[in-house]
Image 1 (cartoon, rainbow, N blue to C red):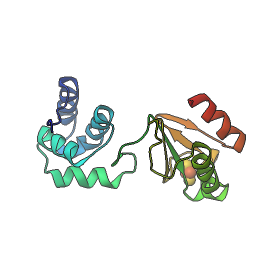
Image 2: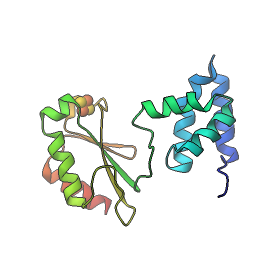
Image 3: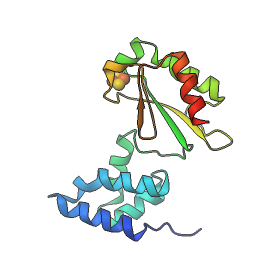
Length: 158
Ligand code: FES
């Protein structure tokens, strides 16, 4: 298997981030985001690549990656639908909304559809509690979701 490599542009970005902070660990979040953008997920191989690039023990890189749900540990579809099922969202039907997404797409939680287009995941609070229930699709928020809203959103993504 070919060894993973960070593109030069990503290496430069990470090295610049490392210079911005007092400790190397402080640059881990932006570095993990950059690696996820390049590789699509934070696998054990990606952890090793980052650890080497940042001169930080792999166990430390892995700890941070595992803690945050925003870092994908397994492959996800082109559209990653992350539904907040924390308390404010749960109180207005987020769990049912999450099930609805899965049913309409025909996929289980955290699976990738056969065409590689969708993954549906339940996540913790996304900081948009006042517009619950809500979902984040890639970088965009979709708020006050109703059944009609879910249908329209999926139509837009298809
Ligand atoms: S509880 Fe859902 S966004 Fe905060």
